[in-house]
Amino acid sequence: MNLLVTKVLTKYFGDTHAVDGVDFTVQQGELLALIGANGAGKTTLVNLISGMLRPDSGSIVFQGADVTSQSVHGRIKAGIARSFQLVNLFDQLTVLDNVALVIFSREGKTRNFVYLADHDRPVRQEAMDVLQRFGLENKANMLAGGLAQGERKLLDVAVAVALRPKLLLLDEPTSGVSTREKAPIMDIITAIVRSEHITAVIIEHDMDVVFKYSDRIVVMHQGTILADGTPDEIRTNDQVITTLIGTQASG
Amino acid sequence: MTMVTVLSRRLLLSAAVILALLVILPSALDPYQTILLSYGLIFAIAALGFNLLLGYTGLLSFGHSAYFGMGAYAVAFIVKYLKITSMEVFLIGGILASAAVAALFGFLCVRYTRIFFGILTLALSQVLWSLAFKFFWVTGGTDGLRVPTPSLLGMQMAPGQDKMTFLAHRYYYYVLIIFLAGLAVMWVIVHSPFGKALQAIRDNETRAEFVGVQVRKYRFVAFLISGAYTGLAGALWVPLNGLTTPEILHWTFSGKIVFFTVLGGFQTFVGPIIGAVVYNYLETYAVGHTVYWQLVLGIVLVVLVLALPAGIVGTAKRLGLRLRRAA
Ligand SMILES: Nc1ncnc2c1ncn2[C@@H]1O[C@H](COP(=O)(O)OP(=O)(O)OP(=O)(O)O)[C@@H](O)[C@H]1O
Ligand SMILES: [Mg+2]
Image 1 (spheres, rainbow over the protein chains, first blue to last red):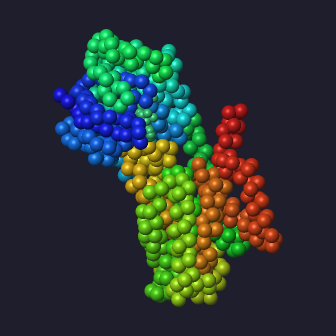
Image 2: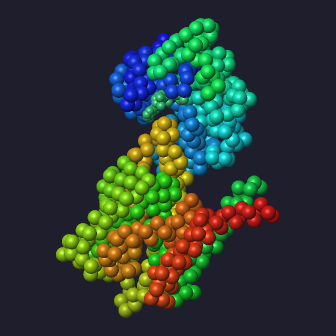
Image 3: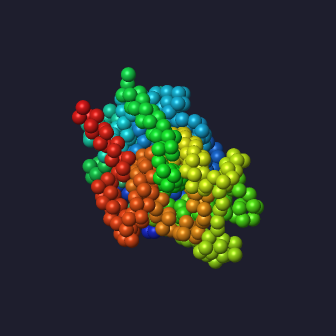
């Protein structure tokens, strides 16, 4: 079943055809890797789907409903959550509060200003559970700004997961961390995505990571979709091999 | 016992001591000193409101004189046109009027952030200031409007009692109680889920939007509460001052509110309170002791800000932490 379908989705920045007539589908329950060289248009595609950018033309249908002109807020309510290529956290809040805030928001409790956030046991408990699954429970009371890079990347994903999305868009969850740290981070993320049956689109440059974790791979090149297939199909796709040569190191 | 309970015990203890001091001070000080303290507490209410925007939402307003002034003028209008002198009516009128202005100005300002937000708040407050000049038949122009001593909870000032004593006792306690109530309410607000959402917006508005917080709406509500607090302070201030003039609407007064807050430390909850009280003393003494008071005050403030970049309370907290670690 198709969870998300984009039709001839297009976004230009001046002469740059960042996303150029893209038909992109995400199936319910899959873990899809979105790959492509720097500047291929991956982040722009995620920005369009998450509502951060408006497309020039084309449409986005999520769970059968057209969300092309829906607000960011509306899309989050519908179940689309995302993380960011460059970590986006609430640095002066504690790690626990970063997640708790999301739960308050999800439950519509952020409108409430007559009770103490710290006294909401169910929310605190759920936030701790989320942190535990991401291996961050020992950092709960630290300020998010004080975390190490790898932990920040994980918390960035945890914040999106705490929204309990139907579709999770992760923009390079392992960028900016050492190669040694990549696998453990991806292990944690994919385990959570699998166990909670979250449909996920993960942008990733590291091909080993991509082949290891994904059900399906979509390759972008200069704003268009170059290839779409299982890891085995992509691995042996000559066109992909020629276009992606030399880009591996740059991720 | 955990570190946290030790800390909060210490906090409770010091709060109790300060509260006891505030209660017994009027019997120990001469009336002039008590009145000075009342001014400090009133400015502290304004600074608390202001800091909901600066410290918690990350918006620097240069136009809070508008809400303070609106609170004060609303009271003066109640006296002038309705001939009412009940303090409770003053407070309600002051809060409603300033909230109405904050709603209007906030609606325009929250579309912007950073310097644009600051400039717009400043410009709008200057509009109000010039209106107070232009419509002199309503506002009294530069002469301002007089406000008599109000009745407190229906009780008039005792006949024959002199105004100074009234202000230094009954009125002081009235101010103190409202200050404490305002403090408690603000404390709950900033620690509520709503308060967390504001802090999230302050730290990262993009991410706040992407976890479902409607940034503009929340900024607007924060603006409204902030303006209403500052208006409440204006309403409390005017009977103490006996007079309201356009000066209180001028941007230089907005600058003072910014100053209270930065001086005390905007990254702490109590910073703005300490800053307001301290600034009020500094200014009063500088004015009293030298004709060059603005120069002297300016230099003192520059030195304080350079020496204590985290503000008085922020610096004290850091020192406290360092001492505890060393121990
Ligand atoms: N806001 C913007 N304004 C102008 N040009 C942009 C903007 N965002 C992206 N672009 C351009 O659009 C193209 C696609 O960028 P995008 O960020 O989507 O690529 P990407 O595949 O995510 O690359 P990377 O792997 O480096 O993250 C690039 O040429 C980029 O320079
Ligand atoms: Mg990108």
